[in-house]
View 1: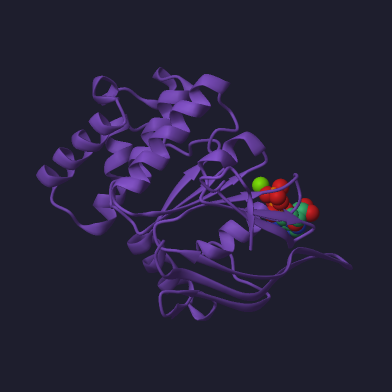
View 2 (view 1 turned 120 degrees about the horizontal axis):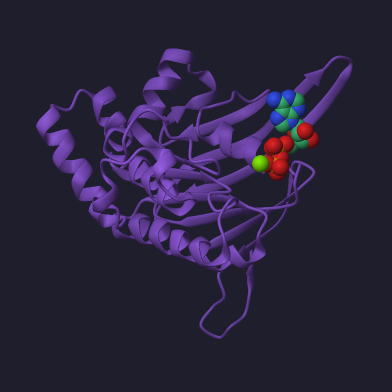
Length: 239
Ligand code: ADP
Ligand code: MG
């Protein structure tokens, strides 16, 4: 397992709702390592999505530090955050978040358009990754012409096309049946492992944590415990 790629130090995210303070993330410190598959597991409302969004630069912490390589995410302004996300981060969402008027291929090329990659190279790379996710025959279909599983394959292709060092997935299989769920988890972890990319996956499904190198269990915005994958002897290791 590699060095820490993301270091989270005493991070809090407190939402203010009128007079009420909601500590969604309430004092978390954690290192995410290069190349690991890390699963954030916990009940609904435990702070999983908030923690993921903080790491991905989609939200700013109320307190604490989030360091990606040597860059402090919490010190970045909106432009710097947008640049950071474009360069270093891929996303997979539960609801796919594809643009409905664009074909699979066009959706997948979006990150390359933002990066200024020329059209010919864009289309070649899009076809390549659509092949890798088993969708070349749907390249010219729009999202509503595809099943949920196929749409999620498109969104996985989009997340990986730039080969970002980290891919974040928030309940990526939450809308899928069991068989498709396992296909999707095989695909996403296979792609990440091939290029030693880091994968942080949010789930409330204990079964899916079998894909993880480490399972970070959250409760009430805090880390309840961290488990490592079963050792060869079949024992769970605690940190
Ligand atoms: P999970 O993903 O584990 O279900 P979340 O991170 O979405 O949990 O939410 C953690 C807590 O923070 C919940 O109590 C939720 O209601 C609250 N929360 C999340 N986002 C916001 C927001 N934008 N404004 C106010 N409260 C929020
Ligand atoms: Mg959530």
